[in-house]
Image 1 (tube, rainbow, N blue to C red):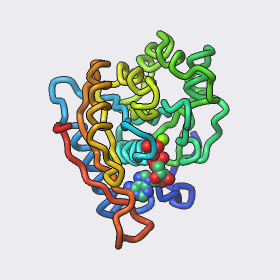
Image 2 (cartoon, rainbow, N blue to C red):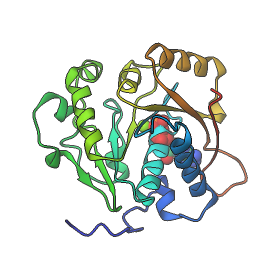
Image 3 (cartoon, rainbow, N blue to C red):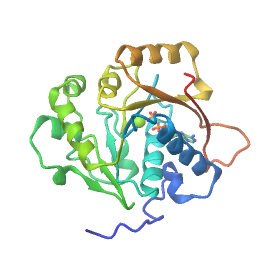
Length: 237
Ligand SMILES: Nc1ncnc2c1ncn2[C@@H]1O[C@H](COP(=O)(O)OP(=O)(O)O)[C@@H](O)[C@H]1O
Ligand SMILES: [Mg+2]
């Protein structure tokens, strides 16, 4: 196995602040999300979490990547799965190829070791979206998807799934069926109560287990542009 020593040069994107500035208050907030997920269900431990939002640009991918690293930093064998088959970004964040990924796994039989990208973080693996398919919802509603994620659950202690926004397409609802818990993210600047309620409704219709709401604020004034700020409330969506 190649050396996966944490390398802040490689992980330089501000998106992964939990790696570049582990002692910042923001990183502490990501660890708080991790802790809250761990405690959100005692009887049925949460081992897969879908991050989604009502509309685009809420910060799903940013938060999913940081929380995934926070899990890996806690020594949990973690997988970040890019379930956004429409506007995938995880491969950019971790600077890996997206030639093969989730879409490939659903359509072809492909060995897991040929799909999984090791990252520069110990205990964190990444499966990218794969090439953008013409029919993402069809792929995500297939039995193959469920079987694939079930298989992954044997390999990892925690699976973090990134996804498209709920109000645009049905993909996140479909993915929520394979996740033990769902975290809804909203950008406080553009927060729209009706959108949030609609998103919650769609998740309830899919029988999703909503375990938290993250209020992401990417444009607080008077703060350094390098940092991002958000705060979190759980169980009160
Ligand atoms: N809290 C934040 N502070 C600063 N920038 C942020 C924050 N959250 C997200 N961003 C930036 O906003 C953009 C959209 O975030 P992203 O995570 O890609 O959203 P989504 O996946 O929900 O579409 C990205 O450029 C990201 O770097
Ligand atoms: Mg995204």
